[in-house]
Image (cartoon, rainbow, N blue to C red; front, side):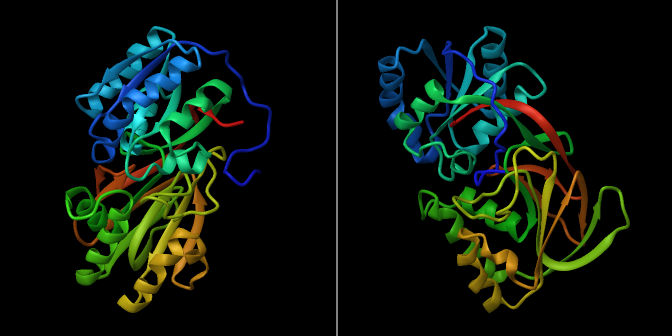
Length: 306
């Protein structure tokens, strides 16, 4: 297994083809819109046939992805993880191919795959990369790419989406600090693979298809996009000082060595709590608790670096 979560088996390669550039111009505080001209120039310089489709919503992005696949084009998501997740979800269990150009705040899916952060440089992956079948996660029928989490993370993600004070990926760290100030532990009930329920007093329960979320926080540092399993990360209750000290460790993935953090692997996880929480994934709300989350093995074809 290589360090990026992809195995080392020979990949399916594809010749260059036409690309439908599905862009959210507002992603990353307008970053995607500002860099759109640079991206189209980079695609033209590489001799790649392409056209631009601007999204009005995630549902519209799904429609554009399906249209691209029907036309034999690569559906290239140029925006944040939410847009990439919507495009990937639309093309799950199909022959459609997804390309990724990071244009949002967090860009965690691209980070894990090793796709360059600068979109123009990432265009080279569309030319020289290989197509791999990667796993997706699914929460009550809604698909996601990276990590679905609830509890402390629910409040932090909501604040990150609402704040206008901080821009860029630092917004997630800011939101976590804001959430910590008023956080009170919750009681979660968790069942793995339909087994006996467990009661946990804690902060967060996460079902990780990939390693990272929140702009470079490696919540599940050993998660793989190709093992057909979710890394289930549970953060049990701790003092606010202990939780504060844990936050920087998330950026290295070393928090998993703390005694109040537990990681297991499962095909499916059922989560309930003693108060209402919204589960977030890829930066957006995806389901309310109680929720059932499961892995979808080798569900979507994505162009990744060789």
